[in-house]
Amino acid sequence: MGDLTVETTPIPGLLVVRLAVHEDARGWFKENWQREKMLALALPDFGPVQNNVSFNAHRGATRGIHTEPWDKFVSVATGRIFGAWVDMREGETFGTSFHLELDPSVAVFVPRGVGNSYQTLEDGVAYTYLVNDHWRPGTSYPALALADPTVAVPWPIPLDECEISEKDLANPTLDQVTAMAPKKTLIIGAQGQLGRALQVDWPDADCVDLAELDVTDPAAVAAWPWHDYALVLNAAAYTAVDAAETPEGRRVAWAANAAAPATLARLSDEHGFTLVHYSSEYVFDGTQPEHVEDEPLSPLGVYAQTKAAGDLAVGTARRHYLVRTSWVIGDGNNFVRTMQRLATQGVSPDVVSDQVGRLTFTSELARATRHLVETRAKHGTYHVSNAGPAMSWADIASAVFELCGRSADDVRPITTEQYAAGKDLAPRPARSTMNLGKLSAAGYSPLPALEALRAYLDR
Image (cartoon, rainbow, N blue to C red; front, side, top):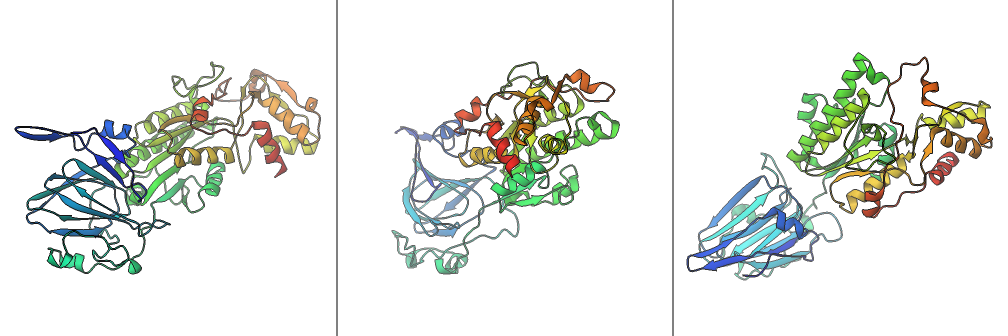
């Protein structure tokens, strides 16, 4: 009977699902939850972990209005109900209501923060619901009086004729309800160059560094309230490329760049938050002119190997954005600031000219991240850098010198081999240019690198 369809409602995120019910002389059959088909119709991939059934013996049983802190997918297995929903979330739609009659051919997706209630319209109703979090002792949440005069749900059976629990009879009216706050954002590695930039775009985020949360410490991970978060931005990393080749550096790099992302990927699936993790063009050997997202990993040194391992781990999470970038410049010590200082001091440096790529300013990286998250771009891997032609380190140094009033000729180009002579250095990819086609297809256009460089130096 009919095709599977999904309809919106006046409550943002509350969706009505029309199910195909197949009947014959024996009875009927329906696919009550079919993830692949429903995702294709833009139903959220909410990851249910528990299925509950509430049997209601008599007509007029009325339950709610409950606002549990998880998503629900509600339907009936037998009978009919009158369902009512009220938006109890902070925001402009607080108090907005919607109601609908449900039989076995109708289901409703109820997002976290929307109050859920129903009234049975006949005897022997089996009401079912999938939820994406486990009930925990002590869980508290807003509830609303069934007879609230502001919302004024048009119950088909008068409430004084219905079976209602003592608890539901004591629920407060809308003017006494504290709206449910959204889940929070967590920035890990908040004091690094990227972490500080992310705080600009997520000013209300919880911000932690190693001292507050060590993701490599099982006890610290177990004690952290991960279920409070909808989004975790992992800007923490071990980035000492050369030191990673030492025995001590190798251990720290593997813990921070591989083990910690693997832990976050597991937690993402357990608690349902979206994980954003930042990686590097070092996961490639630099033999390709441009690096696309699905290029096979080919790391050269220890740092590169740990980042590649982190990529593989993060890719196992259902809700992840793996953001690969290159040549990151932000608030702190970096190549551009070094060249600016040398230019003002009258120094003429030797700079490598046979490694090419694009700069990525942390402000650009943060804005691109926000775009992916807010537009709900398809989960997966995205390459992000500033735009424009590929440049060598010597080209970038010359541009900095010119912007500082020096001649570009004051920068002397040298080869990687010349630069490395007498030094104990890890291998670097010769080509670091990231292909930005997938990012562009997701609707984001980064600023040209030279334009961003000029603005950065002006600051």
